[in-house]
Image 1 (cartoon, helix red, strand yellow):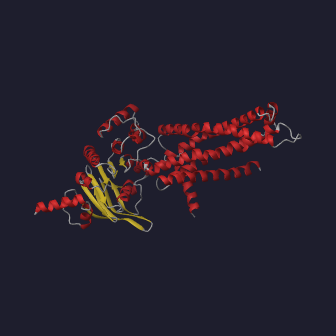
Image 2 (tube, each protein chain N blue to C red):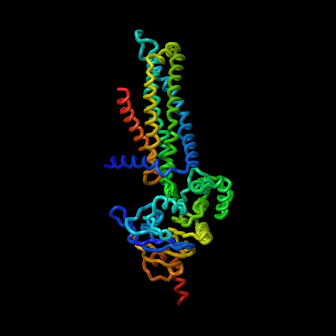
Length: 245
Length: 255
């Protein structure tokens, strides 16, 4: 019963996010601040993880295909497919559920605990529009983060395969071009947009409606990571079934 | 002026406010006192419109808040200032940005005009050289001053304070009390203060209402409260040793 109430509360929150808008000039500053905090501050960790995981995917693929009948370009092909279809959009989003999600929940939760949200309400400001709408808007840039992750993942794979002696550069690049389906990239970005919306709203809901003190802020951050990850994995399954099956 | 008529508020089965009727006057410091759990905070939140009462009316200048449309409520809230117990300053903003916030949200003033007004109110609350500091970098007393400055920067008609001197030393608490009273008279606003601090009652209690288990048990001012025969009130007022001794001295002097 509680889950049904929570789902209802989440959708009511979404409705309120888009009503009683905050003054335009204030909103513009908030959006720029969120772009800095959520998007730009995530680039470093995304670049680091993508590059090395791309490298590991290439090495693992190469080590598992020692059969001479399997073409050498398979390393590049497998790296591209793994990174573009799943690693960059889905697994980076799960990592972001930990980084961005817990940041969003703890910052909004702390505002709730210290009555800053009450202060906004007393001033006649719609706190949901003020706090959540800029996050949703900032995360419209999230696909650029994922595009960077795709590029660096494949680059990491190429560096590991070529400089590790697992594949030649020509074979790897041939693999990248082999049987390329542009719709796979479209599919990856469609789900990236959905994950961005989940990343902005689920942690916000956890923070906004939390009750209690500092300990509960910590618990809400943990719940935020768990539920954001669960929703990303479930929507990933649904979108993949709908678009690729 | 704020007029409250027969206000009832419950949470589930538990009735917190049981038909409160009173008036808070303009240009005066109106105090709500009572023990913890007496319904003070719920009452204040009902006045602010953060809680919806099941029954009864709250009139702001003869217009019931329950009958206001969204625009009227928004307009009313723009004329409310609130000092929260913990200050509720925005952590991510400097002192200057915190005080400027209501001006940015509700006025079309240029930045220079806003800064001028911010400096004016910060001087009014005796806070200088703190403009660029963050709330975490200043003391509790200074945070309360910033909260007061933020509450009055947009010339409110109504000022609400929830335990404005909790956590402060007696001297700073008295300074904050006097500051609120001065501002109330200077700006001719209706101020409602939620407190259980007897020093505040003595210093600035121009009108006092005493809540007991959700009922309005007594109302009067800071001279009447020490003469009342109401046992609930005397039990509350003379609960500390200091006030018991003051009462004993008064009794001895009268004899």
